[in-house]
Length: 257
Image (cartoon, rainbow, N blue to C red):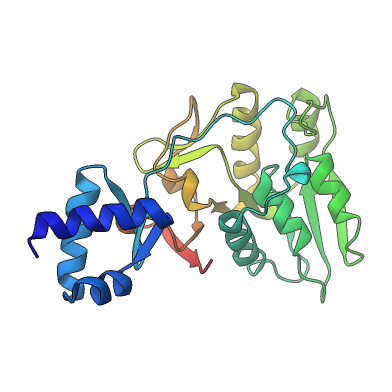
């Protein structure tokens, strides 16, 4: 089989199932892993697939802005990528920590799967996350208040005044998009200064980003990628993204979906 024919079939397989592994391609076409990786690099360079750890996924549409009334509690279908990253993130919480949880779906999933065998404190500006935190008797909760958006969180002047008096051991953040070139970015400028304040008041800043948010850009920049002490994502992440992040001395921890 010619290389062009094999690569065309690989794209068809990826588009049909949404993903494929190096092993699957090897078994289907009886070629070496090096040959498979060359094929995947070639296809990715032409924008036909996106390489991941151990394989490739299809190129999906660009992310949409969250709807005005969006609430992670109302999502009926579990986002497996967010869930995997969230479960990996909670492993970094230790006894007596004071941590901030992001208002995104990742923060909501983290709130559902927090450690239960020791005490610590969670700071949040999301009423949805706070409501979930009520169920954890070992967790002390600090709810940052102010003018609440229809999405159920606060990041205005009053919220920031409260946050200025709090020191964090770890901040778990997940913005709209994250890219090597432009760092973390969001669609609403109102959250920029609040996000920067959280990071300023935290000893360790951890970006928790499902792979679907990586390599993309939104409108308003929050911070460069190097502002994170650690990035947590899932195993659908592009190999190139991981390599570029690590070249910038940003540690990446990958959760298995």
